Structure formats: C-alpha cells, structure tokens
Image 1 (cartoon, rainbow, N blue to C red):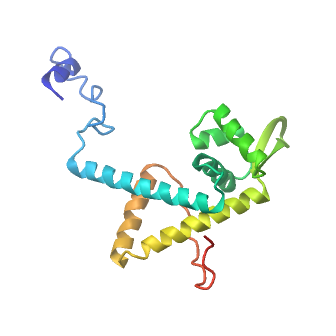
Image 2 (cartoon, helix red, strand yellow):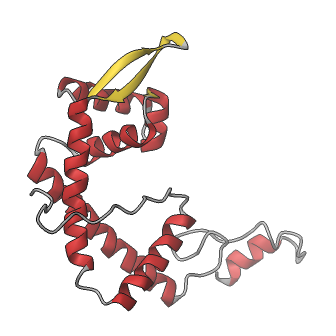
Image 3 (cartoon, rainbow, N blue to C red):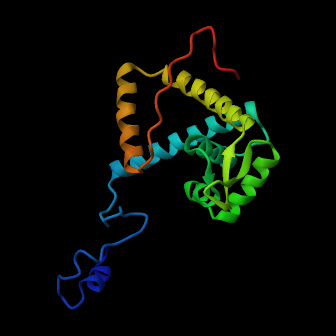
Length: 194
C-alpha cells in the first residue's frame, strides 16, 4: 500500500486500527498480505487445472448426453450425493438463487432425470430426487470422466501422483469441499464406455 493508504488507515498516528485496516483487492490475500510470486504461480496452476477439469466434464457430457449443461450436471451430482432435498437446499449447494434452481429442475424434470414429491414431514414442501434415468446419467458421465482422468494420471510418475494427492487435498480441504471416495479400478476388459 502507498503512503496515502497507510495514513488513512492509521488515523491520527495511532496504531489501534492496525488489525482492522488491512488492504483488500486482487493483489492481496484474505488477511491483506501481498500475494507473493509463489502464490500467483499456485493460482495460475489451479486455474489451468480447473480449465482442464471443466473440459473433461464437457467432453463427458458431450459423449453421454449432449443436451445436458454443466450446471445441470452439478445439480444431478448434488442430488445423487445428498439424496432427496428441498429446492432451497439444492440452490444453496449450487450457489444460485431458488428461481434459477427451479428453472434448472423444470428442465431436468422434463427430461425425466429429476422427480418432485411432497415432503412426508410437511405436505406443503416439495423434495427433489433423481429418477433411475437421472442416476444412470450421472453414473455414465462420472465413469467417462473417471476414465479420462485415469488416463491422464497414468502419465505421471509415482512421485508426481503422490505430490498431486497431497496438493489437491490441501486445496479442497482449504475450500471445505467434501472428499470423493476412491473408486476401485475396473477390470481391464471392462473399460468405461465412451
């Protein structure tokens, strides 16, 4: 921060605002500390990996259900993992407002992937769940994605794979993302469908 910003945060020369007047912005971390070059390298690497993972998901969708969108897939995966949920719960998990989630559910229900039922505990509430078709769709997309990631990971050395596990777990733990359980490898003769 420049001298002008320092003067504004320090008041009349008193130090009492030291913990409250931290800078914010793209060049500062959550505590106001300037991001160093290593941090910027990490951010660039994560953004590159994110682009790869989105592309893998898009290819998996294109091969299994081209009409499905990535946000719709996220909704199906949430329903698959959390069981029957209310619309507000789904919207919160997706980080969207309830009206956006409702439009998504309308499309998924029309496609036969999601069903709505009255909540047995409160008949005025509706709960959402996957249909057998929706569950099968999630399984096909996840299997396709799993196969492509496995093929990429197989190009890494054992040491690189171990380092990747540590780094990715640290990243997802920092974000509060629940861990996905490892899947058993399929037998060689039953490769995942493309």
